[in-house]
Amino acid sequence: MSRRPRRNHSPAFKAKVALAAIRGEKTMSELAEQFDVHPNQISTWREQLLQGASNVFDSGEKSEAAAPAIDVKSLHAKIGQFALENDFLSGALDKAGLLPSAKR
Image 1 (cartoon, rainbow, N blue to C red):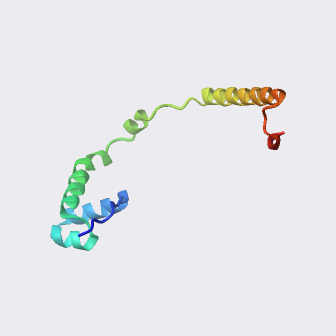
Image 2: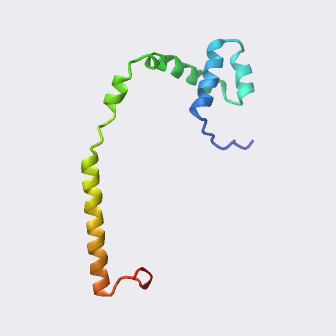
């Protein structure tokens, strides 16, 4: 018997299957057959949904604080530095005759 290649399921699909398992309208075997997923995988996704459900109602302040603040000024300075270095190096290569003819 050949093995099926590994599949990656989208978060939306996982949520759909987990919600169907939570509803309890069908057995795990029926859900596994319907969604073509192993019953153990459905149980795992169901538990993950139940454990993460409390995070849905958390205030948005925690998620914003977890993301690092982006310093736009330092990023612009870094871009300027790289542009200056590229210009300098391309000029040096041109003077040394090492720059390919297509870039001249």
